[in-house]
Length: 97
Image (cartoon, rainbow, N blue to C red; front, side, top):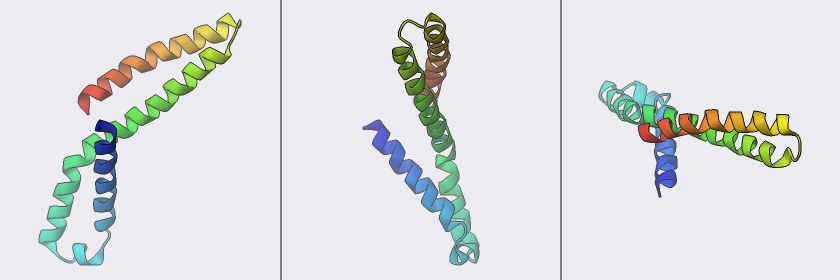
């Protein structure tokens, strides 16, 4: 599924980031260039995915708040407003991923 592929890309990105601190990589300009190139290819996807995950957590919180608000119409409206704000942002990020 897409989410597991994105998690794999993120893990690979993190591993490449760690390799940039490796003295063997730093000492070999060709290897350093290759690691930096590989890392840069996935950087935008990883950053967008991280942003998407953050918004998903916010959406879950807003949905939970909406459900728990009960008869408190002000709280329900605040949660509904937050949900309406988050969903389009998530759609935009999903398209970019």
